[in-house]
Length: 316
Image (cartoon, rainbow, N blue to C red; front, side, top):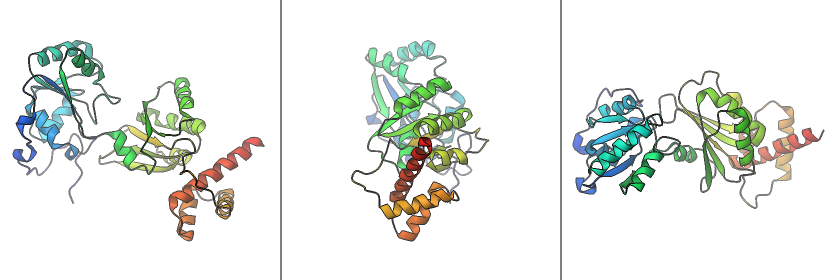
């Protein structure tokens, strides 16, 4: 089995030929164009063949982090010049990149992971290119948002991407309250030094909703935690110093239309929850296994029972 490669590692055995990553050069524009290129979240082999071709044939790569992108380029034998372009120098570098584009050069815009402009630098340069009449071309690929949704088990036909909420608690809580009535699935990003505070606020304001928390997606230390908000918070380790987090949270009262709870099932769930021995997830797994009922249906019934207990407790 091939070992997962991490950003910063050099492969021990690289046998792929350069031609394996070629696409017809005729597909690339000869005039100036800005390519917005998605790059791996962590596993270097997740890059697309087209992205490799664009990076190899561009006149310059505008990167959020020069060293980070050079690691990717070295891995695939790409010798294109890399220059720094991020939120700290975009005012100075933007006009220089536009000048190169207007001379007919091809510029590849990349960030450290995923797709530029999605909670990452890139928006300003894309708007400047549009205003200057420069051709802008997407080179799609890895995205933390869609990757997280695909393994969440939550509805993904409609969702709200909220990105990073405010680092200030008062404002973050206001932002969460604005989303509390949202029926669509919610997707958030969060930094490791704020994840516990963010999760505590989410639990307090949105309640015990089903959710998935992902850390270090596609990397060596990848972690996925599924459960209610309280369960996920309880399983968070103190040392979460690596990588950013992606949170996928069920919308308000998410359940299939027309699904009526079975009274007998609800009573059994309530009895097990009252014993306070097993977690919500464990209760759902036990009943689903014993009764032959789909786990997700039992889990939704568990969530209804927990909400009912909370309402009774607040009424007391």
